[in-house]
Length: 612
Image (cartoon, rainbow, N blue to C red; front, side):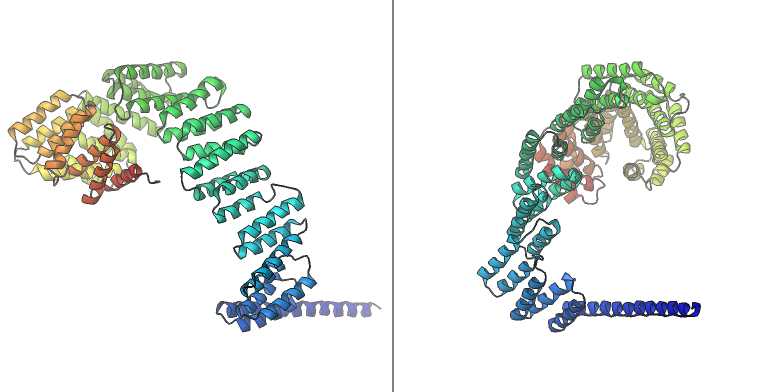
């Protein structure tokens, strides 16, 4: 009995193994046939492909892919009668597969039987049932034939059958996009957020790609306002409107939207802080200040964003006042009071060190109170546990201020400290550059030149470019006068300009012009005079000096710098963007080897209205 049972089990196991092996073999054969059919199809051997696909479908009756390929091959062979018979037989076998009517209609359409084709297409839509998968399949069949209107009718019928007017909104948005109907595309895409709010980021990408002009963006804006009025519970609408305003760089209107959301959702100001940062980085300081101030005044010091918002408010105000040199003494004094108010509230510690550094820069470069700037930074560099890079920035600024006061050795000591502490870092390269420039100011050209040559390889492009500029300048001018008297006068004038001692600098430059009128430094003298007038905010005089270089010294090494600064003046201070555009264009076309050519091209494209 036991032996009989054991034998039975062995027999059953063997049978199962045999079935598995046979199935595996058949599967391999089927896979080989599928690859063969695909190969025939791709190479245009439709008779062989049709025969192979027919055989595959006979063995895999549930595979729509094999059937569709079989019929497609018949259509390509123009064997329409066989194709029609195959489709009719399949419809009879699977009456719920309404996408077959698309295939049937296509067979008629290939024979130019438009009415018969239309009848089959409409029959497919009429026979739809309340099944989402079936509806989508039929619509996809129409889309495959680029019959977008019929696909739209399919989804609209599907919404009726499923009693959900938003279930296919995203699909309809896509179809109207393909048709080029922007208003309906926007309408349906926005409706899709009602059922799938997580699609908002996908819609931002779509709108960014599909909306081409101001008219399109205005349409989206109008529909969003209407959608918000119709259903103010869907927060994705104001979020999308905020995004739209940011795309248009309209940060003030974007702020209105995020403020409304902040109030509605009782948030802590994070959404507003994020927008303020975007506006700040885009240099719209008015909008940034408004957003930061809202956090400070409305959220108060209990907000996690309070300290950062106050700090960024100061920076926004400072940038707004100082960038472009457009400010009054009263503006600077008021800003100084706000910085001091901040430090009175939060104290002078490593936490507020960046603000102390900014105040010191304000005192030194704008209010000309070097003693106060030095005092602030002397205290700052003694704070315990300072962040190393911020400490280094404090030392670099302090060294600059010492140099402004003529205390050369204090300055060079601090530059050397930062160079040593950040040897392979951009901060170390900056410190070495400033120390080399100090040696240049003092007439130690050989040591300065050696440092500039090393700094040509700096990873910081700005430092590298500046080092190359001065290195070339020294090389070109050092050997022209055996006493280096002209170079000494010029480097001394540059130090005086750095120290904001403009009249003394003019005196040195006048000496060069009167005593060495034939020297090749004449374009450099003009350039320095232009820089002085720029610092003094006498923009027309600055433009005159730069223009003189462009007109009379276009072959000299200062020509590209002068042309760039002249273009900047017309763009930012003299309000003549067309003139600026032509100057930038001249620079990158005529001086394509200039280190400023790439930036000039970028500025030109911005003024032309290109998206950068």
